[in-house]
Length: 258
Image 1 (cartoon, one colour):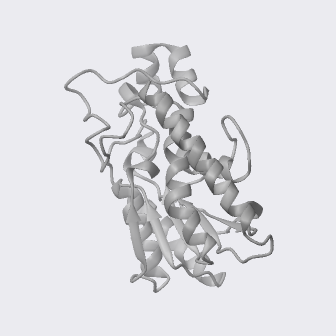
Image 2 (cartoon, helix red, strand yellow; image 1 turned 60 degrees about the horizontal axis):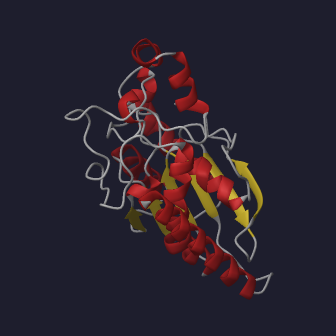
Image 3 (cartoon, helix red, strand yellow; image 1 turned 90 degrees about the vertical axis):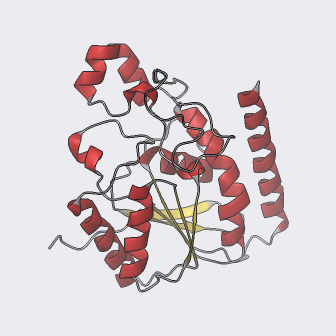
């Protein structure tokens, strides 16, 4: 029942945003939106399901974030506002990008709604360890199924998602499907990010693979699991029209690693 209520609220919020966008002149200016997945994390490198586990960046991940900042600076981009997840790998990546661009004073807002998908009991496991424990089919469905929720962690195991990593009591229980991720991302887009863009401000969102895919699917009108490849540390720059619909997007090429 609670999950159904959340979905209805998200749908109402999305409809209100569409109505507001239609009321604006089609040619009205909108700011530029840049999506960035955090740099390589310690568990990315180890090949482990990370989810809401609050692991740090590797040295290579910090370098990726710096190179992302260099690419954005070289492209002539600047930001008025930055949003990140509540997980340190995204927070630090955002700090590095803004510092590299000379924009350390830009306001940053953090939210659990931009956190990575919660992988439930799979968090911390490598692919083969997960298969040995839960079987091939559940792991494949957890990785690729849109509506499938991975097994929940045992009581006393990983921290509950409602209290971990900056989450509020409104957060879903541990073990999210990709559909669940979209459900929690949608309200944040309409309530926090879209209004900034509608005012003509340029926004940087530093988040995670599945949250960014959900956001991209929303902005391009796609349903289901999007296939957008989101590599660590590579900025995606989206051009939006007056209705905040994506008209063009491209990944920036990073400068060579030093």
